Amino acid sequence: MAISKIQDAGVSLTSAALPAGSVLQVVQGTFSAEAETSSSTYADTGLTASITPSSASNKILVIVTMAGVGKGDNNTSCLIRTLRDATVIDTTRDIGYTASTASNYIGTVSLTVLDSPATTSAITYKTQFASAANNSRARVCSSNSTSYITLMEIAA
Image: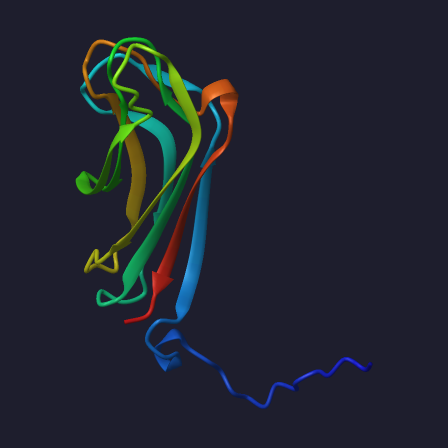
């Protein structure tokens, strides 16, 4: 079968010409260094990515795939949250909770949120984690497994 080639006829397609719901750009960040905390104070996981929206009315679809998530001994769980700059936009609770002192490393956790940043300035998304009970280990990227954050600008 022959391959067809569309010739440039001087037509340019801008993001403004695309229909609502179109993906305008995609950015991905990765991180793979194990992090552990026994504190209920949130700490950065190291997973981050930045994007500059082309219109203040567009949305950003944030997809987090956090690998190697779990909790150690004592009766606790791992907490993970997603932030846009310093603003919390999503929180996931009780990851790995067992109602016992048993360790529980569940593997990969996915978090998805459709954010409306209302800006055309560069913004940074990141994840943080904590131990729910402030007395036991919560861990992400166990054994240096790779985690991902994907940002998609969606046309309004």
